[in-house]
Length: 341
Length: 234
Ligand SMILES: Nc1ncnc2c1ncn2[C@@H]1O[C@H](COP(=O)(O)OP(=O)(O)OP(=O)(O)O)[C@@H](O)[C@H]1O
Ligand SMILES: [Mg+2]
Image (cartoon, each protein chain N blue to C red):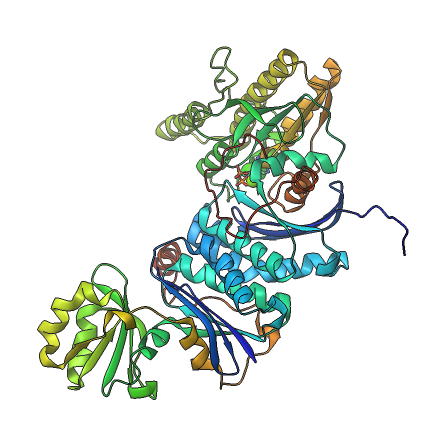
């Protein structure tokens, strides 16, 4: 006793914004002690997408199981924790509410502070689990619901410099996959097919002049029209060629705009985040380009690209250090904006 | 034994703390506030007022449905998470039974109901003191429910905020046999939840994980999917 010891910051993080019920324990914002994800993909596949009511029902079934597993895998007791973090938004409101209410109840019983985290800040901070962030930093967020370029001057400061005007990249992947009769979620299937293809069907690129905004609905329509025309002519389409053509268009636009923004804002580091950053084509393209430019580039390991709670815990660790605390009256914010913590 | 009761099955909110059969404190509100915002602060406030800590709770009773899906999920999620955190049992109680309990002294049939839209209701009916269930809780059209009640040719006391929506129809069908609970009895009370279960055997804490609301209806997307499958199999 009497000896002063630096106490670790240990965060239990919970994420239920869409169709994964997830809990994780993160030490000092950098170390994953446990990371549990209960996916609903098998159930949601039946509907070709996420049905909000079904998602909410599964979350209630899984929530305490997943939290318990995160604690058990970490070999930790609630008394070892510093705070509880939870995704506050954006996301499906009914789904968010399960994680939020479980987090509040748990925090209340164990007398722990609670921290509400922005889901996209979480995706971005998945990278902090790989390597420390260097500012100014440019994040390319490409997920099921978002496609945006986010400029960060320091921890907790987010400026969206460009975003999609219609479909998100992941959404475009999933819709095109459906046209090609592939199961939900289609992103990984298109990625795989694209790599097997020896040829590509040529599809347009939406540059939107000098804007950092994106648009993928034209590309999606081009794929649909292509299939439609082939069908009318009684010709078979080659799904792999379509997948490769589609992916080339997406990757080229994402890479080019990210590079241009990285140079304009003179950033020290570029990161990719969100489910679509699991895409092999995109990862390779970004890695190559930024290596040539001599700009540091990171992308999280595959299992930290799609929804998980480790990333929420990573962001929450920095929020905790910055003194951010939530209230027991915390509510789900389905359209939460990304500005500051 | 200290009980925490949580009732969020519909728009009203009720939280109660009961110790050894005595109500220590209870709140019943009809403010149409979001349960997600109000439930936890209310639980905290009530426990503070009666000088208890969360760890003093020995059991949790929660309204498990039917009702608003989101409302049910908030109550059940809070209840099961507190229960699991404390390793104490959580007990689900029918939200219709809790409501009917408000009029349990009525000598006749007590019918509690919630509006389920398109002339449908969630409803159940009991005899005096809830000693017998004469109509099992179900999702049913108001006309069918009234027919069933009419056949019993007994006085019926209707309980619930949504009864007002169907008042004309009820009177038309049941006439003199229809009674309506006074407004003070139309809001569910969390202390009643506890009263209904406190003398029953307690479920084990192993059952907490699998505790979910009783929605009484499968999700629409799932119903359509099942229909598709059947069509596909023909
Ligand atoms: N290898 C891949 N290639 C392309 N897309 C992929 C790949 N792996 C996953 N995806 C896509 O990522 C998306 C899921 O990502 P994520 O879980 O981050 O999205 P979300 O949480 O639904 O949306 P948001 O984070 O915007 O709320 C899906 O659209 C999926 O198809
Ligand atoms: Mg996501």
